Image (cartoon, rainbow, N blue to C red; front, side):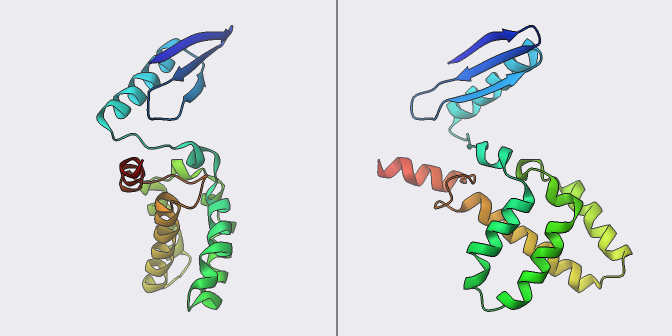
Length: 161
């Protein structure tokens, strides 16, 4: 159930608690925004499709790229070739965004910029594939406590309990 309370003159604090899920809290500037967010979270929890976005809301793409370089790349055969690509990606403006705000329009803009800068189409495809793997690793890795888990991992853990 959601609890909405006025924090101060310009803030509303929401807590959503449901058995089997971690407590969710967030602060908004209007009561309407707070109520809408609470309704969405409660609905997703009731339907069993809720995902914890907490780590994605506090992790930038640059941090995810650095973690990927540190934890995933060393186990790959092409690690020496992948490290410079990850560093180029982490210097781009898109790396300053939070993981949760990754949108296809932003990636399309990045793709167009790379093509305009003279990168070969095959190179652009490889860079996008690398970014895709960074996102999929960040969203499906059950051993990463601050990264989102996908629905299959969440349901698999609840079945074992």
